[in-house]
Image 1 (cartoon, rainbow, N blue to C red):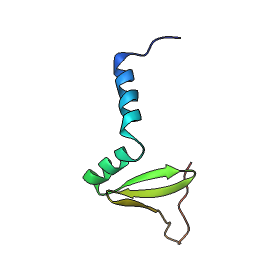
Image 2: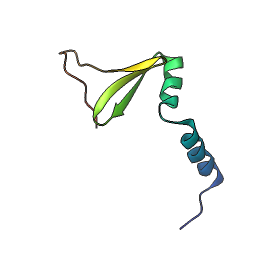
Image 3: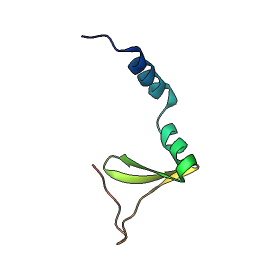
Amino acid sequence: MRPMKPIRLILVSTLFFIGCGSISRGCAKYFGYDEVCVDGVKYIQFTSGASVKYNPDGSIATCR
C-alpha cells in the first residue's frame, strides 16, 4: 500500500473534521442554496436549514 501524499492527507483530514453539511452550508452562503443527495432523495440546503426538493409536478425529486 502506497502512503498518501501530504496534500491528500490534509484534504481528507479537513473533510473529516469539518463535518457533514458544513460544506453545503458554505456553498449556500455564497450561492443562495446547494443541492444535496441523501439516500436517493434530493434536498436543497440553505444556510439555515434544508428542504426536500420537489419537481414541477409536485413529486419528490430523486437522485442517484
